Image 1 (cartoon, helix red, strand yellow):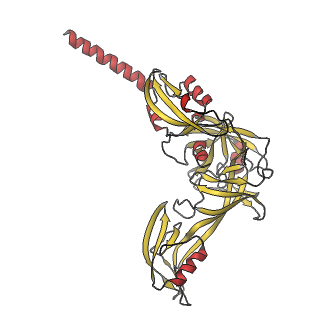
Image 2: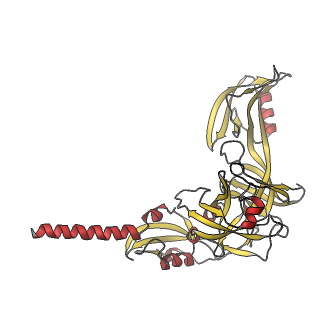
Image 3: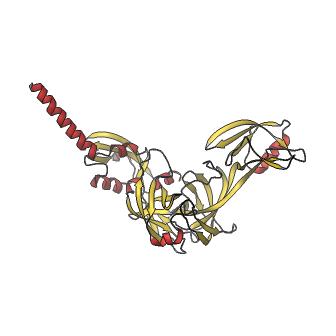
Length: 403
């Protein structure tokens, strides 16, 4: 009988302690943090002080694994401990240097040349009957990489390769939705008897985006927050060359429900301000030739890690009114992403000035820096089609990884 009572008391105590732990320890958030996320000492101290991961959790840095060079990111480990001594998880962390960056926010023109030929239509040309038919091989946005194992870097490469083929069947290697495929297809002949793929392709693209930030020491820039793509799939276009330009805003089409707006800008290609060297899922990256036309060197901020991001008030930085301004937004949710994604943050535009100007988030605002507590913590990436006052943003973590 006594043993039974002891068992009941033990079970009650176990359930009581378990309930307290479940309510006060954010286990999901701890295990969703990715390996190698960015942070700094002050953010980790603040997380401990404010009990960010629960009443009974502390984050300890293994300082013997870290260097102290402020000019580059350093690596170490953060250990999450229950009651200060029971380790729950150990994560590699990259310590942000105390490096200021110039704040972006102004629209830029972009032009890139792709590595490979990008299909820009679902139709195929019927040369014999002068008709357009649905093509059974390629989809809008596919990137042709090789024909008969010969690399395709430009449109001219396709003609050169096809001029040498003697069979109407060729093997084409192509990319679709960031996956590689290979398929044998039949060529068609034009009126001159030359073999052609019969689809429309291109190797250069241009558009409008927003500069996010620029490093002070070497003028390396980050912009856009998402990749430059073409077509209906999500292929990240590999580039061989690219430029950014100062552009002039000539108008704004406001966004409405199910009708996203856009910035209307013009840029002259002779006014090149920098070179694009990388197009990634989290934006475009490169180096500015000069700083004076695109950034205000008097306005700087630190980059904040994901531990800096909290639901609540924040700011979007934008120059779409003609001057650099800060607009009020509310961060609704900061997702805990174990894997990279460009929809890290969900936010809502609260500032009446921006709502009057654009209706919310419009095309061309991608890359606009988001600041909270004086740090750049992300960049605008997408708008909610059903509600242009709401949008997505990417963490600065993912952008820093690309640099």
